[in-house]
Length: 154
Image 1 (cartoon, one colour):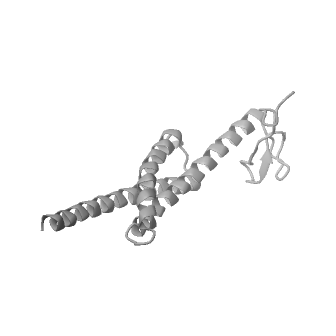
Image 2 (image 1 turned 90 degrees about the vertical axis):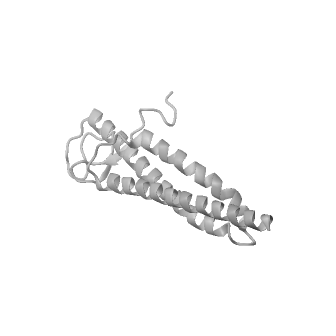
């Protein structure tokens, strides 16, 4: 008895001819009439799922990196600064781990596709923001150390 998520369940994908969403159980597209080869349909559905995942994860990485900015700024606020000081380093460490995972899983995608190009831009934005925030954070730690070191010396 096949399970709910068995390989026999049809998978959806966009018809390569008309772009409408169809499934792998079809022998031809119900929108344009293009014949469908089952193996090609399965491969297309799997590839489109991988591309969707790459785009979703890249967008998430960009958001993670951009969230570093308000978390860093919040570390300077007296009321919520202590909470932000705890969460900023966690997010700062988690972001490059997730970036490395994205690269290991999706860097082999060789497709001249607007969605993949946008995903790659999102990943590059995440890398740049993460690097800039790392520099700002390091500079602020050094400045705080120098200022506090001078105060304790006096």
